[in-house]
Every structure is written in structure tokens, then in C-alpha cells.
Amino acid sequence: MQQSTQEKPTVLILTTGGTIAGQAQDDKSLGYHAGKTSGEALIASVPALKDHANIEVEAVSQIGSQDMSDKVLLDLAYSIQKAEANPKISGIVITHGTDTMEETAFFLNEVLPHKKPVVLVGAMRPAGYASADGTANLIDAVKVAGSPLAKDRSVMVVMNDTIFAARSVQKMNTTNLEAFQAPNAGPIGMVNNEHVRFYIPAQPKAQAAFIAPSKAPFPRVDIIYSHVQMDGDLIEDAVQKGAKGIILAGVGDGNTSAAALKALQEAQQKGVIVVRSTRISSGFVNRNVEVNDDENHFVVSEDLNPQKSRLLLQILLANKINTPAQIQKEFAKLY
Image 1 (cartoon, rainbow, N blue to C red):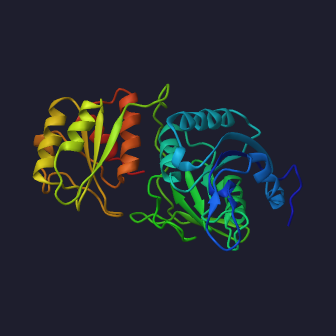
Image 2 (image 1 turned 120 degrees about the vertical axis):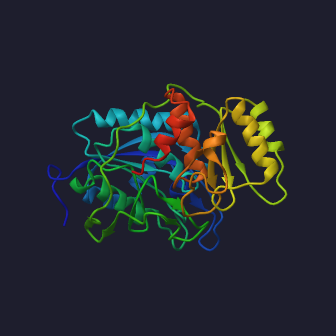
Image 3 (image 1 turned 30 degrees about the vertical axis):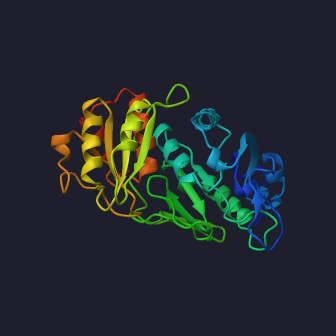
């Protein structure tokens, strides 16, 4: 049933591009051009949005998410902070490419106050393709952002009728519609027809936010991927290029070769923060199992994957939280 304008929430949609704003080359192949549709045109193409909320639109960027940058992350954070201060706005939706959506969601989760709902949404198939999913996903995201049940929660991702928390969500498939999962925590809710439903308990209440970095680019943090026959060359190169931190995407429980471990030890002795994460999609990296983290002054990522670990370390360094002990304390917070 369509609500009156007075009854409906007002949702601000921030557009950034991505597949959801892409155009298919034809209705048979997956070939497309990301971010070709403007924000205004994208929203105008889904008139059913107005059945669920009063819609306002602001274009932040028009890019594929592989080109997401520190500057765009800050632009999004500032736009959301303005919306938080606007009593007319009930919630915020961000249209975003799916490739780096989990990173943007996590960054915003760490620097926003978590009062009004913030929901990221994308599409696995572009408009014009036979099984395009963007319209349904966008309508679901607006429903969540406008729901009173979504207040005071972490930043969320809504895809394929499912609601995820920013900390735990990951893109787990390259092209399937059911690409997003939360391997360690599971989803926090679902959109069922007209109903937004959160599981009980969905999650702890959100923690206080960090201050967003004041400018782009953020402190340099590199991700180094562990593999067979690994030496320390890439680690040494990262240090020489000025990295303030190194995230190890390690094998298994965040492990790596003896040569790479030696290079990480040397990097730490030069003042570089070393965080051990894993290239595995689920599970936790534990302290002092095969690697003596206490002796080496390493940090472990707990449940965070390498790309989210990188963002958290950048935020912490920008907030002058820069000792291994302080940083480990922040990584250990599960929220």
C-alpha cells in the first residue's frame, strides 16, 4: 500500500556509480560499462522507490568501485555527517559498485556515529541484462534505511533480500546474485516483501566512531599476499616506498614463509606496523600460535580480512593510535 507523503520517511540516496548504474551491452552477455547512468537517471528509472520513501538524491561520484579512492570515502563520510544533522532525513542509502563495497561500508562504519541507518547497495547484473538485480536491491535498501528498526545499528549492506553488518560482510562470488555473505557472523536480517526483519539478537549496539582522516590520501598501508616460495622482496619494497603499515594476507592462521617472516620482523624494527591477516575467507587469526606475536610486536587481525584490516589500520594511524598494543586492542573489538 502506498503511504502518504507525510507518513513516508525521507531517504537520501548518495550515488557513486558501479554496476547498479551500469549499462549492459546486450541482454545475453555480462559485458557492460559501470557507472554510465547518472544518479538522477538511476533513481528516476525506479519509480517504485516513491512508494516507500520521499527520495532525495546527491551524486558523489560516477565510477566503477575498482576506482574508489580515499577522497571519495571522505566525500561520502562528510555527506552522511550533513545528513545526520538534517532532521528531515530518516536514513541514507549509498549506491556502490560491489567489488569494493565491503571496504567502503567498513570505513564508514568506523568513522560515523551510527544514529541514522546507513545502507550500501549494489547490483551483480547491470540494467538491461535479463536477470538484472539492481532495481529490487535498491528498493530493499530504501526500505531498510527508512525503517525505525534500522536505527542505532552499524553501517549495513543490503543485497539479494539480505541485510549484513559492515564488519562481517564479504563478496564471496564474482558474478552470482547471491554473492555477499558473512562467513563468521552470518546476516543480521532480511527484507521479506514489505517487511524489514532483524534477527534477534541482530548484533551489539555500535561502538563510538573514530575521527575520519582529515585529508586524502590516508597513511600508506600495503597488503602483501603470502604464497609458495615467498621471499621478503615485496615486504622490503613496501618499506622502501614509505609504508607505515603492512597487512600480511597469510596462509592458514596468518602464517608465511621463514624468509617473509624475517622481512616482517625487520620492517617492524624500522617502525612499520605489521598486522597478520589471512587469505582464507573465514575464521580468526589468533595470537601466538605458530608465530610469536608478543615477541615480534605484531598485531593480529582477529576476524577482519586483509582489505578491512588495511582500512582500520589507516584510520588508527590517522587518529595517532600507533603502537602495536593500542592497535591490537582496537582490532580485538568485535562489533
